[in-house]
Image 1: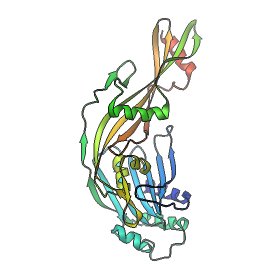
Image 2: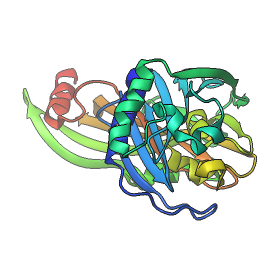
Image 3: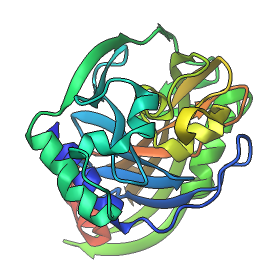
Image 4: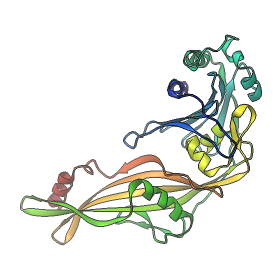
Length: 328
């Protein structure tokens, strides 16, 4: 946990001067790094008014912390990736009152005058090392699991994928977000050919999409942005797309009203298939798996989570054709 939060804190030094914020017209200074080639870490830092929100997730943890412009810790939340219904709340040991931590920022730095965000970072890291940032409570998140796929989805064993059959309703909204990122559906597009041991293989490419609802999450009114971010498992900018936010005490953002947010597992399925003669002896699969969240407020972007592959050949067309010819 300390390693994750320290990594986030180190990047706050890259944030620029604060920008104005209004309850329903929130301006954001953002830095986002999400790499589909690295399933281990993705993080985002945004500045809203004089507040910094830092989000990080890896294959084990999701963390979001709040730091004010003086470099003082306000709060933090975390949960395990595989635990949807519980998260932990952390606050500075020297004050457990959110307003007090904002109004009396010097308490976190042993009453030393804050000179800059750069110098304060070292003090903040010292607070973690001295265990001055402590767990205050475990929060049970009210959830409702959906055990059945949307009626508009089916399992296609030939492509090893869930493909939307009826592009309607919320599933189609989620799929549209994935298409915005990866492009439209592609069916049996010819790519190239190759000959091995007297056999000629023709390579074709197919891209399809699938989405189904996995869980509903209830967001109470007045919940801190960092808590919502960890609860939903998306960065703060994505939270703004599905939850109405308003500036609360000290400028930190909270949810304006109660909201039910539905999470859709959304996947871009990529298939390269070799045709030799009249049959297709081999296919290589690469799936980009992510999430799209939908509520009465709006629809989030597609948030990439992981890549699933059937082999290590997908990026090597010649190797895929060769394997198909060998298996013919």
